[in-house]
Length: 249
Ligand code: CA
Image 1 (tube, rainbow, N blue to C red):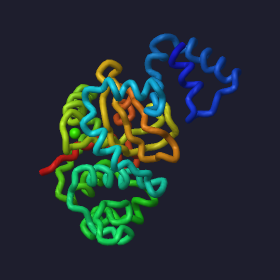
Image 2: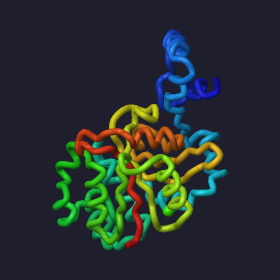
Image 3: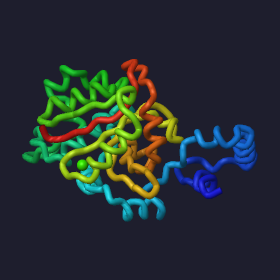
């Protein structure tokens, strides 16, 4: 019953009318245990006491601090990949381009991310309209002096993702970004990109720093749910979503 209470009580979802809750419970009952087990677990918001505790207990949170210092909201509805990249590049202390709005100071921003080289991969106008694919994310990142290793779900596995991501989250100056389908983790609705900041071993959950900060807080998501959400086809590329490991060359 605990997960149901949390789901109903989440401040990010509307409180369900009682009839709806009863109907949902009945549907689950009819589906039996196997079907209930296929439902995504409830994401746990970092802003709840439970979410805070998961971070305190995390033994793989090396990337949390550099990322949280650079945490930004995506500039438009399709700019999740741009916002995530800007966070990671700033967190890696890569030499940043000029940012006229900050005078003599340099910083990666969502306005200066599209250099001439980046525009050759995909123009900012296109990304503003339809977002970017996982391959474009990797190619855009590599227009800067970083290595971006792209893993599509069809060529990887939950076990490999968990192993590589946890190792990365225990190391400084390299980062994990995920490309996933929101509906598969119990959120609304489409494809999304955000950095991963920590892992909690006891609950097998990853912390996603969701760049749609107007919509969702950072959430702890079960590894299996996150994997299922990456193991979905992006109609923009015809390939499955997945993850990117970003490191210095
Ligand atoms: Ca790392």
